[in-house]
Every structure is written in structure tokens, then in C-alpha cells.
Image (cartoon, rainbow, N blue to C red; front, side, top):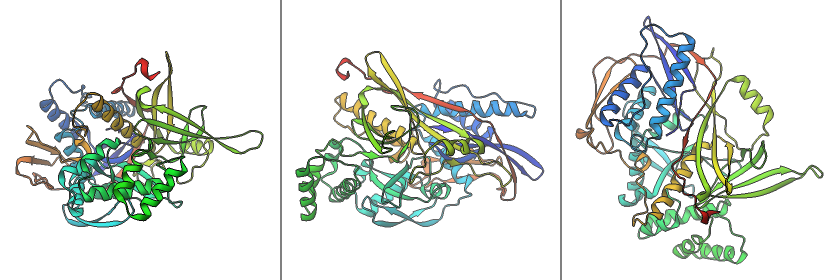
Length: 495
């Protein structure tokens, strides 16, 4: 998880006021939390995970000045970033359910039966009956059940927020995680998108375990056909392309998959054009992530003929020492300057914006994905891509590395434990926990008394309405990032 707190909101209700912190996760606005709510979370995490937590920002008795408020915002942001980088806590029951409940509170969402449109890899829409507060793993489980896919194969697929652009290009916005409800995430999304079902893993070997299922076989096939047609899977050999076309026209599903899986670009994801500083600052590049490489296609103008020229650079994943995701907070002036300096990108979505009152300045966040690459012996270089898909780039690289590490460890089961996105969260030893709402009402949870898709909750106070509250956004620019050095497997063979 990548957390950021770009700004705060001052809430006035019933003669009292409090400050709310706008929480963004993986580049998207998620919820509004008070200091006391985060402190309540910290106390429960501290009991559940002794000696794993960073220190929590200190309490203040007197009202905060603007500079003190900015210090608190920065400290809370740093605290959440460190918590989100912990592989145990970030996948745990407490944190994910706390964030899910916070999203419910923001949307004032009560559990109700709804219909959710889910698009399969070939664009076919399926209408799924779900409960509005279900988490992404619960919705994924329902989708698989509706399709007739065995539950043991569910971890091979994932739900994404995505949209089809005017030119037919597929834009993957982000992968839906266990801490969010797809129905609410769709409502909060600042662009028009839908829920899409796609293959979750990268290595073609992982397909083998699910090819015994006709449903899984069909899903992999239609996604492969679509990826070939949109150019995500590429092949320069005309004979291979003709063979794939013949197999597709003849309806030879297994043979088509067997042939397309042999291509190095099978399983690749192509992102929208973005600003990149390689080989020179300010270039427009298209990034493609494959199971082994990151490929940048850089578009430059030739000075003499004023023509577009493409330069392809390949970065093997095994030579990436580390990477990071950075949140850039921008106000109106920053956005105007950025727009005037950058070339317009077809299909590029706008930066994530925190909802504010009409009298407030527009506050936006922009993400940058950076990786440190071993160019040559003793020569490491940071390469940065500024993109609205930066969060998905970071999580994609993480999952690629996870598969490589597990594969090198010679474990039989290559499927990583992806509990944070594909499986229902296991309560483990933490059966009882509490959520302190913004109006100080206490919600008690007992995971031992819940079914697979719902969480029983009991409110100890009357809910207050905040629809007519006045809000004031206080903004202070800054750039914060947490470096992820989960993969440093660089040896002489990689040079």
C-alpha cells in the first residue's frame, strides 16, 4: 500500500469542529480520518503486532497552529507509509478491515443488495448480484462462482478498475484490493471506468495449474486474443502470427494458448504514454511491463525533419535494485505549470483530486514511479515515469519480483500468497477489534460471528449527519516517498 495525505478538511457540525485528514491509497482518494481514529488503529495494531510499528505522532493538548497542523499531516503520512510497507501488517485483517470500514463511513453506505457490472477479458458484460459493502475479494469470489470457476483457481484472477478509450486502447486504472469495496471505489473514482476481470499473475507457468478448468481456459484464451489484437503481445515473425490467426479462426483454444504462451511478451501490460526522464528529461514514453522486462518506447522529434522517432530501451527486472512510488501534491498553480510544460497525451486521465468545497482551492495528487537500474558495473541510475498509472506500475513490478523470487527458491507452488488483493482476509488471532467513527461512535467487530461476505457491526452511538457541514481545505505542498528495496538480486550473470 502507498499512502499519502495531500490535505486536510475542517469539519464544523453542531457547534464543534475537528480536522479530518484526506487519506489517499495507491494514488486514489479513499477516506477521511481524524487523528483519534488513526490513534485508535495504532493502539490495536500495537497489540496485534508488537515491535513492528513505527512511533505514532504525539498528541497535543492545545489547538494546533497551521505549522503544527502541517507537521502532524506530514508525520501521519510518514507513519502510514511505513505501516503500508510492512508485508505482514499491510496484508493483515486489522488494517484492511479498518480501511474498508472507513470507506463505508465516508460513503454513508449501508449493506444493500445491488447489481454490479463486471467486464470479462473480451469485453462481455456480466451482471453480478452483490452486497454494496462487499470487499474486492468477496466480489471476486462471487464473480468466479457466477462463472462456474473453481474457488481454488480464484487467486489466478483479479478485479481491476479500467476503461476502454476512444481508440480502443484498454487503460488499467488500478487493481482492486481487499481494503476497498468495488461499488464504493467506482463511486469515488474521478474518471468513468468499470470493473474488469483479468489474469492476476505474470509467469506463463502459472497457467498450467488452471488449464484443467474449461472456464479458466476460456478466460485465458479471450484475454490472450484481446492482448494480441491491441498489441500488448507482440511478435515479429509473420509465420507465427498467421498460425495464431488460423488457430483462432478454427476455434483451437488450447493450441492457440500453447502457441501464444511461448512468446516472450505473453502476459505483458502496456501503459498509456507518460512523461519520462530517460534517456533525456521531458521525453514522452510508453512503458510495457512483461514477466522479465520493463520496456520503454520513447517518442522523440527529429530536429531536421520534425518527424516522430521511436527509441526502444529494455530494462531486465533482475537488474533493478529497488523502486519507489512518490506522491506529488499540486495546487492550481502547479497544475497549470505542469500542463503548459508537458505535451498532451491522448487518453491520459487527470490527476487524482480530493473532493473539496466550492470555495476551496483544487488540490490534486500526481504519482511518479521510479526504479534504480544497473546500467553497467558500478553505475546505477534512477529512471522516473510521471503517470496516473504509476501505482499500478509499482504493484506490477512488485508482483513480477515476487514470482521471480519464489521461482528461484525452488518452491513447488509458485503462486504467491496474495491475500491483500485476491483472498478474504483471515482474522487469525485477532477476532475482536473496534472502529472509532468520526463522530466518536464505536463499532465493535467479531470476525468469529460473520459469514464469508459480511462483517457484523454494532454501533454504540447515534450517527450524525455531515451533509451540511462547512469544509475548509488546508494545503501545504510536499513530496514524500517510501523506498521499496524488496529486490536486490543482482549478480555478475546479470551484467
